[in-house]
Image 1 (tube, rainbow, N blue to C red):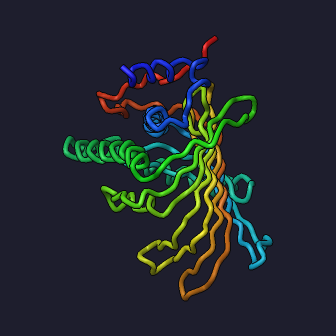
Image 2 (spheres, rainbow, N blue to C red):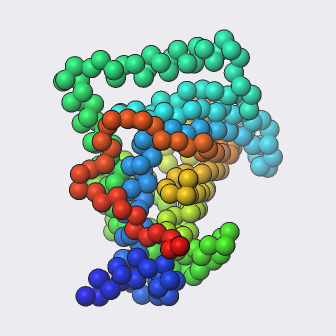
Image 3 (cartoon, helix red, strand yellow):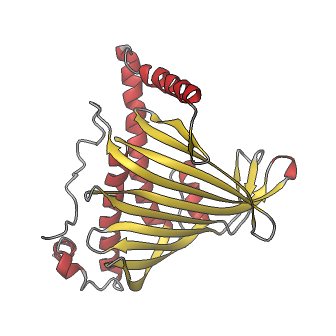
Length: 291
């Protein structure tokens, strides 16, 4: 009965603001609803086109900017991932010759899926299914990887958001190697109280970690990742911006200090006949704004 009562409160935007998230059971139910919404976000995102501006800023030892470069891509969803078509460099459109070259490469990649054998289609569908399971499993892992603490309400742009601290659970064992990164993080998240959606997250890497088995890059402890989500087309919540500040050593032990920024814009639905959601996943929004 208690869990059912909590669910009724979570589905009511007015009662939601009166929740005492300092109570462990209430907070756990709240987090479960947020995680379910995030699962749906990631699966919906698989059938949207969008533009990604990726900016890399090289800093000196004092944190001053030395150099920056950016690339803007049109990101196209595929059955087995995404295809990134380059459309701008350093904020400027490509020349007509290069734009045609990029379009030709995109057409060739997208055309690969048009005339597949039944066996190839089956293998592709299996890859898609594995991607979907991994995306949804990630949020189950998040709930087990951290201790969550409610820090209070804040107002962001006229909307109430809950601020939560997350600290690593020393007893957490990742179910897959891909989720090991969760053991290296702590931080804070902000959750929109009406839609039960994560609006921002600030994560700190509490351990040094390696990319490419340490042969390519070693990232120092203390790297900071900021992530923002926004409501798109007044319906779905997708990534809006990320900023990663990191330092470390690359090939030949060369030190680096960088800031990487990603801006996501121009989301639009991509027409596809592929079923992107597990049959047993209810896509009804958990919380909707009342008129």
